[in-house]
Image (cartoon, rainbow, N blue to C red; front, side, top):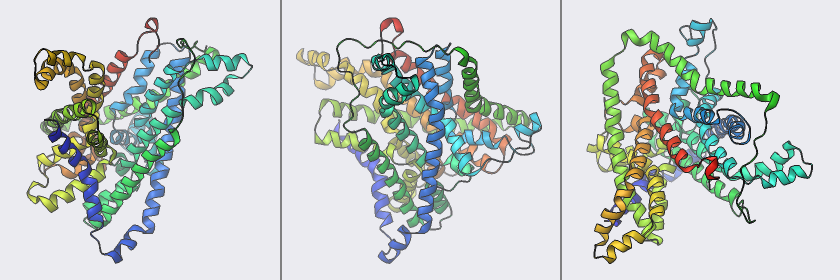
Length: 520
C-alpha cells in the first residue's frame, strides 16, 4: 500500500530529467561539441545570471527594510502591513508583466489617465521588475520569521558597549539573517531561472525563453534538450551552493532562560517617510496591477466574451482539481513511509519527490512532450498527461502540511489501538486519518492554486483548444490584446488570492500573541 505510490512518485518525478539526458545524447558525437559549446549558450547563461541578480537585488531592497519595520519598530498596524507585503503573491509574474506593459502605449493607463506617453518596458529591467514585484514576499516572509526568532540580548549587549545601531545591524543582526536570506534567495532564484511567462512577454532571452523557441519552432529539439539540461544543471548548482554556504553554521542560543521580545525602535521623525515608502511598495506591487487591470477592463467590458471566460475558468479548475486530489493521494502514503519506516529506500523516495519541483517547469514540460511522443504518441496533448505532469511537478507542495501533522500526532495513539486488537491499517484509518483532514485540505488547496497560476506546463501539454486562464492571459498579452486579456488576468488574481489567504491563515496559527510568548 505504501511502496506502490512511492514507486510512482520516484519514477514520475525523475523521469523527465532521465529522458532529457537520453534525448540530449541522441545526437551524433561530432555534433555534441558544437551543440554544447555554442557561444549563444554562454550568452544565455550570462543573461540568466543578470536577471537573477536584478530580481534578488530589487527584492532584497524591498523585503529587508519591510521585515525590520514590522518586527523591530513601533510602526502602527503592523499586521495590516504584513498582509499587504504578502499580497503580491496573488499576482503571478506574467500578470505583473501585463500590468507594466499596459502602462505604455496610446491606449495605455498612463496616457489615458495622466497624459503621459511612457516607452514600453522590455528587456532585462522589465522582466526583472515584474519578477521582483511578484517574488519579494517570499523574501519578506522568511526575513520576518527570522527577525521574530532572534534573541535581542546580543544586540542589547553590543549597544551597551557603545556600538551604534548601524554597526549592531551589520555585525550582529545581519549574520543571524544569513540562513533566511540564503534560503529566500534560493527560492526566488530557482523561480526566476525557470520562469517563462514574464520573461517571454518582456522579450528577454534567457534559457527558458530559448527552450520554448527551439521547441515551438521545431528548429532543433536535441538542442532544446541540451538547453533544458543546462537549466537543470544551473538549478542543481544553486541547491548545492545553498548547502555549501550554510554548512556548519550555528545560530541557536546556548544560554539558559527564554528569549525576550525585542524592544521596538521608535521611528520618530522617520515615521512619515516610512509610511510613504510602504505606500510606494504597495502601490507598485498591488495597486499598479489592479489599476491597470481596471483600466483595460473598462475598455474591454462591452465586448467581453463571458462564455469563453467561464469555459477557461472551468478548464482551469478541471486540471487544478484532479491534480490537487492526486497530489494529496500520493503525498500521504509517501510521507507515512518516510516518517514511519525510515531507511535507505524511504530516504531515496523522499529526495526524488523533490526532483519534480526542483526541475524548472519548462524543462519538465519539454521532457514530458518528448517522452510521450516517443513512448505513447496517442497520449500526446491529452488531459491525462497534463494532469500527471502537473501532479509530479507540484506534488512536494502537499508534503509540508501532512509531514508536520504526522510528526505532531506521533505514534502512541496508533500503537494503543493496535494493542487493543486493531490491524495497522484500521488503526491508521480510525486514529490518524481523521486528524489529517485539515492538513490534507491545506496541501490540496496549495497545489490547486499553484496549478491555477502555472503557465509553461499547461502551454506545452494542454490538449488542442483546451485553454486555461493563464494561457489566455499570455496569448492575448503577447499579441498586444490588453483589454481582451484583462478579465482572464483578474480571474487568475482572484483564484491566487486563496493562496495568500492560506499562507497567512497558517502563519497566524503558528505565531502566538505577545501574551503567549515568542514563537519557536
